[in-house]
Amino acid sequence: MKAIQNLMDSLRPQFEPGGKYHKFWPAYDAFYTFLFVPGHTTPARGAHIRDGIDLKRTMFTVIIALIPALLFGMYNAGYQHFKAADMLQTVTFWDMFLYGVGKIIPMLIVSYGVGLGIEFGMAVARGHQVNEGYLVTGMLIPLIMPIDLPLWMLAISVVFAVVIGKEVFGGTGMNILNPALTARVFAFFAYPSYMSGDKVWIGGMLRGEAVDGYSGATALGDLATTGTTQFSVMDMFIGFIPGSVGETSTLAILIGAAILLITGVGSWKIMLSGVIGALFMGILLNGISGYATTPEMQGFLSVPAWQHLIMGGFAFGIVFMATDPVSAAQTEKGKWIYGFLVGFFAILIRVLNPAYPEGIMLAILLMNVFAPLIDHYVVEANIRKRMKRMKLQTVKA
Image 1 (cartoon, rainbow, N blue to C red):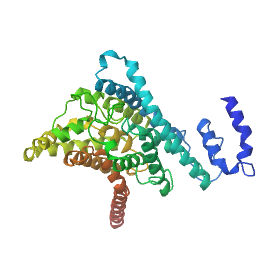
Image 2 (cartoon, one colour):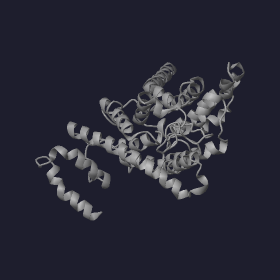
Image 3 (cartoon, rainbow, N blue to C red):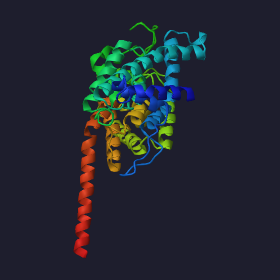
Image 4 (spheres, rainbow, N blue to C red):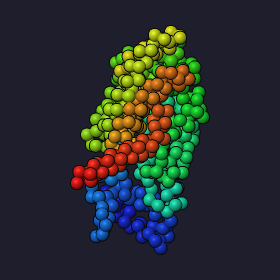
């Protein structure tokens, strides 16, 4: 590392004001501060927060928390492929894992290559530092996409997410929508046949040509069309089901949630209130299951409320998406309201929208829009409470 630092230090004059490549200082600074701790010191004047945690290290913690879901997603991609091909008895663990690696690594390369390329270009054009927010977004986008999404579609989705979802608002810290979910919603509406439907979640299988008798539909897809699912509770909890790369294993996601909570990076208030909101909505739907007009709808309405927590992308969304510190509510009371409504609307959309049985994406994006309004009313309520307290103290005096 010392040799790398010496090389970077020798190149610094070329990128500083007056240097040959001074226009590209943001790119140099991004690489340097990613590899090494900046040598800045606190100025003598002004108020400053002194903390060992900066944005890069916060983002790195989230990436560490995503690794369990990523690794299991690699294995599950191979497992689902060989299961569809009726070859589970003839392949090993490493065959399945390496198959998933071969599918997912190109998605990560495209996501980071396209996204960081735009970030660096924007920083150079505007003359400011490169934002660190894409370190996590670049990992999240492949994890919430189908394994066989064509790479060019992934690239276009990344461009839309970074440019329209973030840069037009001013970059990291200014966006009102979660960039990763913005990429997914773009892909969903632009390329619906690649984002939903039977057999699109099995890597390497020709579209609609999985082995006879085997369905590639997700558990939620089964429930939306038939009212039942072929997958057991244990399969859904561990993650042996078709689905987006990182969303199938609730167990792996819980490991990531524990890392976020122990390090203080994730908001336990949003996670807990999201679960409470989902359970509340699930219980309400169970209560009206007898009024369903079709057996399929009755079956979906009758799913035990707690099972919704381990189906689809709910767990992944509530842990890694809803807790995004930029697009989520900022006030402490607002986090409870925000999280509850995310969980509430996720299950409501999931069950009552037959065209789209996964509701967590739309629920989070909806509440991203309303998060500033929630914070506004929480702050206003606090102001009114303090004003009343001050008036009461004045009268007593």
